[in-house]
Length: 171
Image (cartoon, rainbow, N blue to C red; front, top):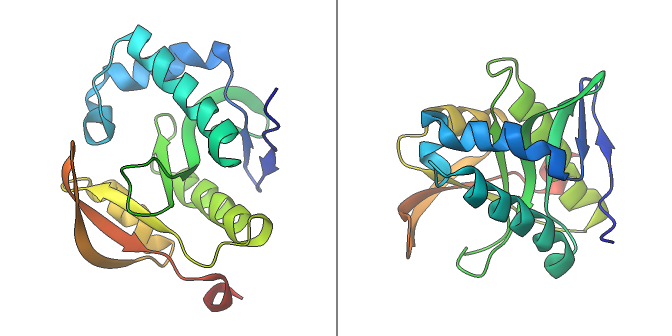
């Protein structure tokens, strides 16, 4: 088993992905809301993707969490740390599919970033954002991230790079 820590914020729990999260995750990936993050996908493709999310924890020792409300274990998003081989560096990213507009992505993103800095000892992190994903840009800038030059991804094309303040700047 991979040890994936739980993180609690004022309103949210970040926890390990589970098989029972697939229907909510698949509903998100079947919707237009997933167009900026590789969607749409079928339920079977979403299953494989969630398995990759879990595998990232085993390969890197960190990864992304399912986000739930603290008083309800139903998944509302996926947030965390991500660093596949075709990324220029490690990132903090977010997908919130239920309860959007309530600040959940910022709250969960800050918790994931704090884990990167305080637990993993990172000194920098970026967010990679598809062009046109204005909501995600809003989350990144709300977290204090600053726009840098684009990264040309071999599959997804040009992506905006948003550098987050380091741990010293947040202290």
